Image 1 (cartoon, rainbow, N blue to C red):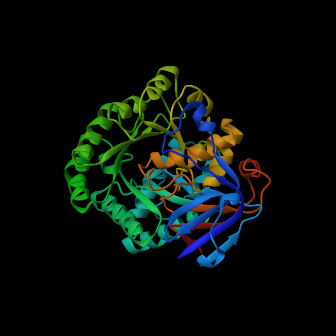
Image 2 (cartoon, helix red, strand yellow; image 1 turned 180 degrees about the vertical axis):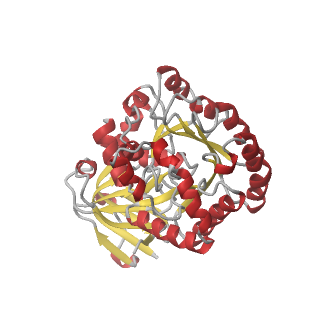
Image 3 (cartoon, rainbow, N blue to C red; image 1 turned 45 degrees about the horizontal axis):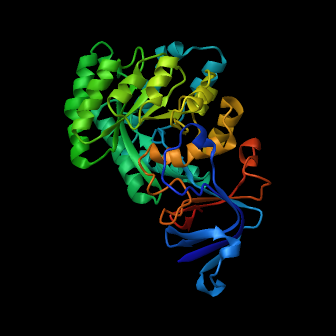
Length: 413
């Protein structure tokens, strides 16, 4: 199966090397104007300026004239909670009416609300809901995604979530990474027995996860009134002993020490980063750990946005992701993430696109497969509607500018 795109207005993200982009390099977004792109089966086979195209039309199953349109690598969403049972719009209305997070939690809301719904749902129903959400974000241009557990908060619930994620991997041609987030919060029965729940994570959940190969990463919500840096390190080291790499929920509400703990553990990424000071930024810049920013969570919760400009200007490696979840970011739309990053965090369009593609791929250790237009990588592509420039994509934030999405050489229907 071959598809040839001709007369592409701009072929975006043609990086010559697989390189995690930092500082000024993040603003370098290579674009080939008036280009062609050849897809063979599920891979990118060739590309270049139209003036160099020497192939004959009869050699292809499909030829698409992309005049006026751009082609980008599909989005790489490296932080989501896509597997959940039911929405929480009632809490959304409660917040509008002035209830605080603590008020909502006291009513049985928040993460514990999602845990109650998830534990009541069958694995089949959870898979059905999650598969529909996955298909929805594919249509929005996402071609690689990380999905966390963390709404089970019990041995059975966490394993059920991870088994659903495994089924999503097997049922979809999207690149999916699974993260075990049993340490999302403390379930009600362990509110006064933190040690008991940590032991359950380490001694009852992790051994089964390892035997069934249910996760790639381990994550902990390192925050005041959740898990301390010491508890975070202990849980992550137990996961590392079972072959999982660390990712950390860090510095969302306070200077929690999550960034430093993640770097100490060699974490692939530390995510959120709404609360950062100079010392924490310096620690991150001198590490190989990626800072993943989740602006739609700040948007939905009316919190200060992540200091993207300071992080970029201080040479930190950053990625962008949706944090798709029912409580604080009920959207998996990476197009809005890119726009919001430009509008509210003052990122250049080129920086935001790179952070949502190649750097997002690095944040899932998928940089050899996806994240840029490169020969041999998967044909995960966004074909835009006709646009005047690539900056028009975040500028016209409320419009759907995606014409079609290709994942592994097949159009998303």
